[in-house]
Structures are given as C-alpha cells and as structure tokens.
Amino acid sequence: MSVGILGTKVGMTQFFDETGLSIPVTLIQVGPCVVTQIKSMSTDGYSAIQVGYKQVAEQKLSKPLLGHLKKSQSPPLKYLREYLVESTEDFEVSQVFSTDIFKVGQKVNVSSKSIGKGFSGYQKRHHFSRGPMSHGSKNHRQPGSIGAGTTPGRVYPGKNMAGQMGNKKVTIKNLQIVSINTENDVLMLKGAVPGKQGALVKVSK
Image (cartoon, rainbow, N blue to C red; front, side, top):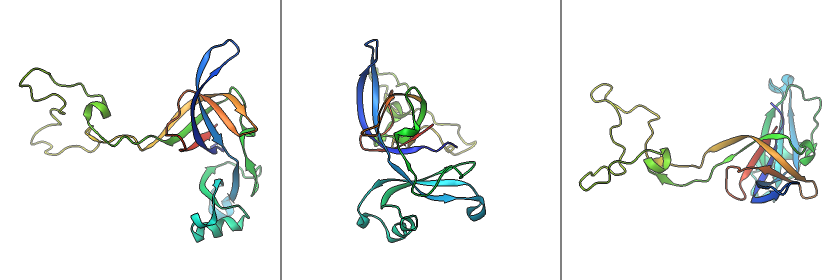
C-alpha cells in the first residue's frame, strides 16, 4: 500500500486550462502530516507507519493519546491513520508529508465520509420505479413484494429497503491532479469528492 496523506475538503470551483476549457475541480487542503510511529516486523509483527494530521489544543485529546504522541515528540494531533508499507527504511519519526509527494497530472484515490441525508425511501435511496399513479392504485411509492411466502418465511439480510442514506465511507478512484498550490498546501482535483466542506479526506496514490 502506498503512503497517503490526510486533508480537509475546502469546496468546489472551476479551473481554466491553457485552451480556455472550464474544468470543475475540488480544492483539498492537505497536510502537513507528521509520522508519529513506525511499526516493524520485529516489534509489531507487520510493517507500517502511523501518520498524524491537524494540530489541536491538548485539552481536546485524551491523556493516553497525548502520551502516545509525546513518545515521538509529536504535537497534539487530532487524526491518526496507519499505512502498510513493504519497508520502513525510507521513513523516520517526525518526518513531514505535504504536497511535495504529488505532481500535476497524477491520478489519486480520495476517500471520505459522504454527506448524510437521513432516513430515505425506496425511490430516493435505491432508484426504485414508482407504482401506477391512477386513482385507487394505493401503490405509488410503496416497495411492492419483498420476497417469497412461507419459504423462506423471512426477509434476507441486505434487502434494498428504506433506511439511512449517506453518512458512509466512499472512495472515488483515479481523480486527476489539475494543479498544486505549494504555498498553501492545496491540491486541485478534477471532479467531485465525497463529503461536505470541512470533512476529513484521505488522498492516496
């Protein structure tokens, strides 16, 4: 697994390329991310690095988490994520990742939690077709039959029914980096990214 970087979704805008074509883009404020721990085969049974993001006041973190961060002399960081690596030789504690690990034109995967839309019905959540709208139908937006009768005598788990929509992890693959602002650590990605403004975003190669 390649090492990624954590960031915050700023919002969407448009970018004009050299030919004057308007491209919809998403701005992501990434990093700086600090390596807070290095795990090796000898000590932990697998090779990985732990990355921290977003410095906050110490009062907002628990004492065990503060003690863990002080071992590596890291500042109080709100988010910690782990990345599996084949070798930890290229990494060291307190190493900082930012936009320098990316380049323009590169394809990346972006993961975030999608916007929660509350309890939704069949048409909105699963794109069911509606029933007849004529007078007396009584089956306009109902689900219809949901399975067999006596056998199996139950509803199978995972059946498409009404329920909570959104508010789950979504990954969008192969988004192209259109531009990089190294001064403000901002990535400009072509297309839309899941989550609302201010949401935590994970960008990986």
